[in-house]
Length: 178
Image 1 (cartoon, rainbow, N blue to C red):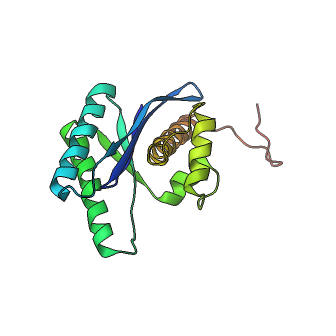
Image 2: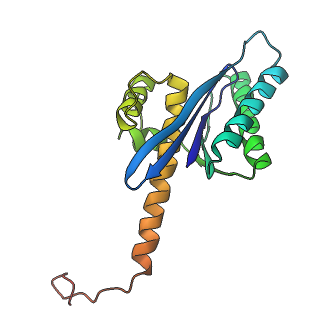
Image 3: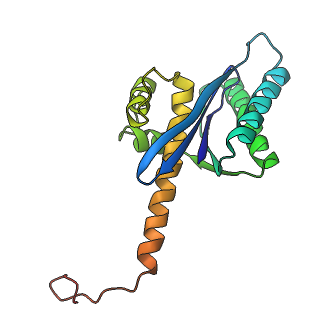
């Protein structure tokens, strides 16, 4: 079970996804809202408290976050970094590992296209997780981060399993010899 987090200082999205067999199931999702009129410290505390509550309630195996590598506005980048820091702190406080992915990796995992729009991600999340009502955009981004991590873990497990098997000798035509 993975907790995806889409950090923001006004709206932070979160979503918990579980892989059962080959199927994905959303366990919970939501958003944390803070007024832009509130001091930054108050907003960050609100995010920390909400994520701590989610971590205690769902007990995920890891947190999946989008790796931020640029921003147009320096102040926005600093504030986003603070919100990410709060998510990292919550994970550390609860003994949960953190996996980070680029926006392109997350969008590719869900939509199949790394430059998908937020609306395309939102639509695919509804389809993949069979959610009838539209998932809020920030929660959809968080669920996408969780799905990205589950897909990566599944791939790594299959790869490790394949590499641990005794290799099959190959015939010159490329087919295995039995």
